[in-house]
Length: 315
Image (tube, rainbow, N blue to C red; front, side):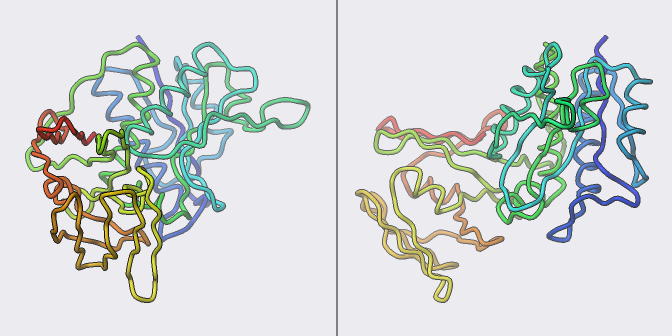
């Protein structure tokens, strides 16, 4: 039976990176807990290095991992320093399935809408692995950096428990794919709302993929992301809160939050807008319905269809 060890970055007297009212140690514990739950739901024998805010240095993590004797090991962290996105580190001499594990976790993070900075290594002294967690363990071992805690857009990926859960499940599903364990469908708990994280659509013959934000029970698309994905130039005047969009036909005039007035494909309409952590968001359902899509919900995926063969899909 497969066994997975989850190391939880930092803890106790070491909070790790701190920004935007979050501590890395708290975020790592939350994501690791959700990862553990998802693995156990799939009958994987799994354990974490800590379940509360205690001191948890790399020597302790390595000792616990060796005692647990897992098939593979993961160390969960959050990044800082001005970047954006996810990245995963593996050994300079990767063990069996280590690269495959990294690729599978990366693919799952992309599925939830997170940008990837790629698969990486870091060389330390004497041409050995820099990170002790990777260097001192014998089994396939990787370090997952989920997001940059000090980046305003990355913040939208982890600033609620639902989003931390999405990250934990993404790591778990990458592990399950590596272990060739079939992934079970999500349990539709009463009152639970699924976080939609990516919008795929075909518009004017071009395939578009944009990030999507779940906020206060609604799904929003970032206007800049949506428009730039098919060739528009977007300029924002912070003083007036006006957005000027120069786009290929059909054109969109200046818009102002929270009173968005659009003219798309000859149709004038107003839709809900939000300013959130410096991102200008429009409600996805409003946008699509006013573009003429029939929006339906099926198997936790929002599907939009039009008679002219344009289509969209929330994942």
